[in-house]
Length: 199
Image (tube, rainbow, N blue to C red; front, top):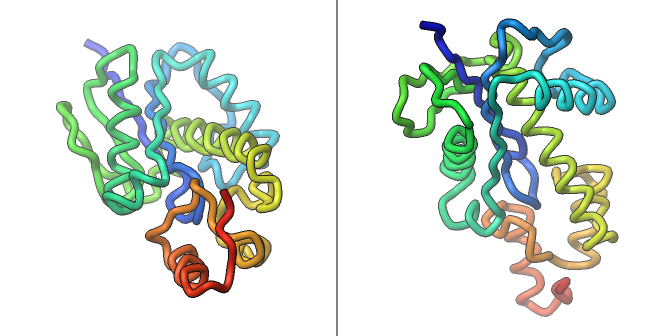
């Protein structure tokens, strides 16, 4: 019996805004994909190209997210693990084993192992990192249309100087993570009457 190895990775633990995304991928050994690597080491153009190939050639894949509101409720680590579990549950096939990037594994019904630097070592995890990153980036581009003053199309919600300046100028949106330090600080300043909240 063929072992169906599923790779899992997340994208978006560090940003101050938007959901955290995770992807789960079971690759097809008969249809290898050239160029898989940690999504952070690939250009945006290369990531987008590989994401299309993964969606076409993988035996199964799933993408899931956990909202900023949920992140605030359960913390970012638990939210990342929940996104991973949701991604695995979306797979059309049940994997024999799940390899997860990093130190922590979500609770799953099948054998699961954590692989440090897995996005560079395990092709299935590399593929998952690419799908998670491209899906999250696409959502941040959509959110940029809703909140054009924040520059989500550029920094994707990460705490850049531009983003922090935009929060100071325009306030906190409903998609900001209120439990994250810089956002919490901005909210405290707003409640003391220094800013107007963005609606």
